[in-house]
Image 1 (tube, helix red, strand yellow):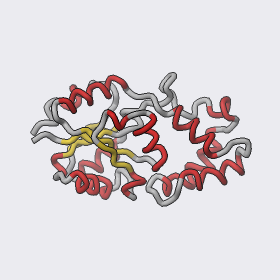
Image 2 (cartoon, rainbow, N blue to C red):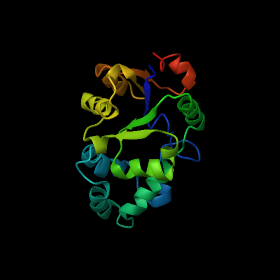
Image 3 (cartoon, rainbow, N blue to C red):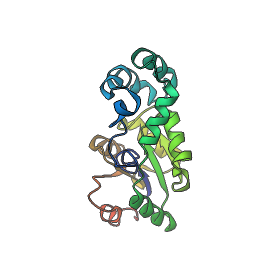
Image 4 (tube, rainbow, N blue to C red):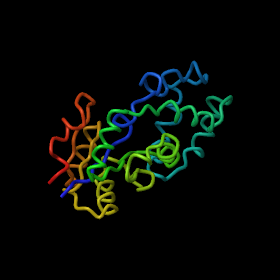
Length: 203
């Protein structure tokens, strides 16, 4: 039977800034007058873990932080900048995934995202046109590499774990998938999708 392919987003299908592939925050201070280190300390470190599993809303947590460290910015201004600057699609990989789908291989996204960016990726970046679905942490209430993430995706797709194959750039996520009984490949971007898969989507 044909395995379903589950593809990570950041570091795999999305590779940083559209202009040059650098981190979305590379020019944050120059563009918006906010130091990336300050945002990391005041927002990401204390708040992101709850946001990414859906226990807190991105805007609700970001707005008061910005009021304290960058009152010249609104949460929406920063979100718009962040999402648009973290949206470089790996066109070659996307084309290869499309070829697999035309051969009958189901392709889904499996990613740690909050609700707003998951929606942005699917609607604005347009990934919904290229995949069969998305499974993301804020919607599932748990994140990779938690085994609960993989078990929920398996249940949603009504597929046994051996019928699922994850492609992810984070080794811990690969190991988490394997612990849940999935097949998994560590993506480094150094090989094509075909080279990584071999015959692994057909069983």
